Image (tube, rainbow, N blue to C red):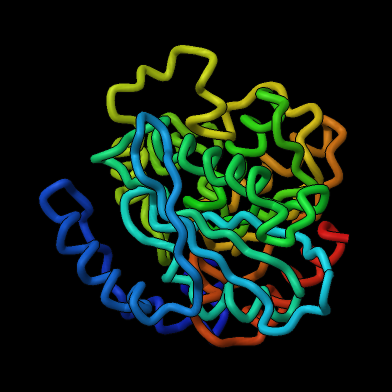
Length: 312
């Protein structure tokens, strides 16, 4: 069957959106259009704090807390990494979602406003995420956060950064993670190119296209040569050693360009001994959960249940 024949009827609106060519010249306009669709920082439901990042850069963190918490209760904590292909976005693009999730789970959520490529290529975005992780451990008493119950979570490019962060945290051995929640994660820099070892005639035809994906990976890459031991931090799918990676939840649409790399990563994690929960939703393209539907509701519930288990 062809991709449009496999598309869930709830996501038919994806067919009306034409493919957009991504380039350095087009990026400012794409950023402006996308950023106009979500809540501005001035009207967000989070508390903003600043900390010092890599090379003296200032890093913004957005804190989401439950409205009501029992006196003296120490909450679990989620470090959240937003999507946007590494080149756009900020935590407020998930503002209502994160605020509601913090209330529902009775957890503290710290969302990191990492620096964006191509102005700040690898490893700056990943190091910003690591700085946010370190900040949580340093400020856990003021946050009333239990760092023994800390999960890293991200959508799309944020999922890719979250996966790389889990590997980096394992290797540096400073800040343990309880788990990772990767939602249609952007893991493999080869996807959408002739280099990709994983091909599927039904993926990447609706929603996020190969051309945009390759542009974003090149923006993140900058001058990085891909030839050293950092390759698994740049592109988590390239990490050969997945031993001692924390328990992992992965969800992805069956029509998503990232479906093959997500399933492959889940299988490799499982072979390395990590507990893995994997969901592939039929008829769903990239970012399907931004639109209402039965599958969207199911995916939301699956994420909440996974977080409840991982956070204990």
